Amino acid sequence: MSELTTIARPYAKAAFELAVEKGTIESWNDMLFFAGHVAGDEQASAILSGLPTAHAQAELFISICAEQLNEQGQNLVKVMAENGRLIALPAVAELFAEFKAEYDKEIEVDVISATPLVAAQQESLVAALEKRFARKVKLNCSEDATVVGGLIIKAGDTVIDGSLRGKLNRLATTLQS
Image 1 (tube, rainbow, N blue to C red):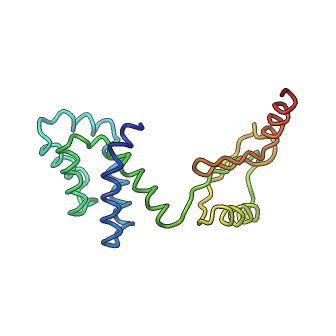
Image 2: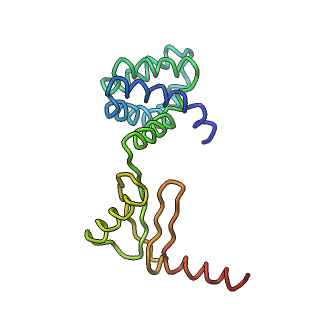
Image 3: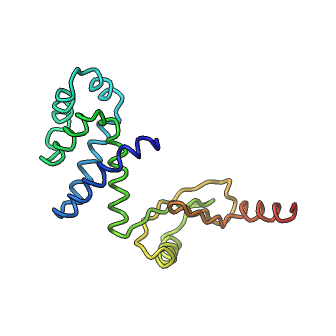
């Protein structure tokens, strides 16, 4: 995956810079999301890879996406097809979404708890996390009975393990050292 990310980064960066310049970040995000799903589809990928020329691949891809791609999006598909990089479109979409979140000062946070969080707990958690990260927080809550008590919070590379199991593991490690 890291190789695809390396390949996708210049395409995503160029698309994002164009979107910022034109003020069309949201439409580019939607367009790349759709194109990324088409490129990631096994059947579509098999059909596209069987075509003899990059031009044929680009034309078929554009016809599959139909009106989901504007002129600039079609140009991106053509350039990526010419360079044999259509397979990297899902990574381009993912990187573009990351650039958008950074630009919008948003962060997606996964919260794992033993029991479902009520609305008041979620609001309190969002307020605390927004203060800590200095960004708008989008909360993704899930339940896992193995957490036992407390929360596990994952935001990008940051992990805050406030679960009872995590505290017991840290205590055991401290006692063993």
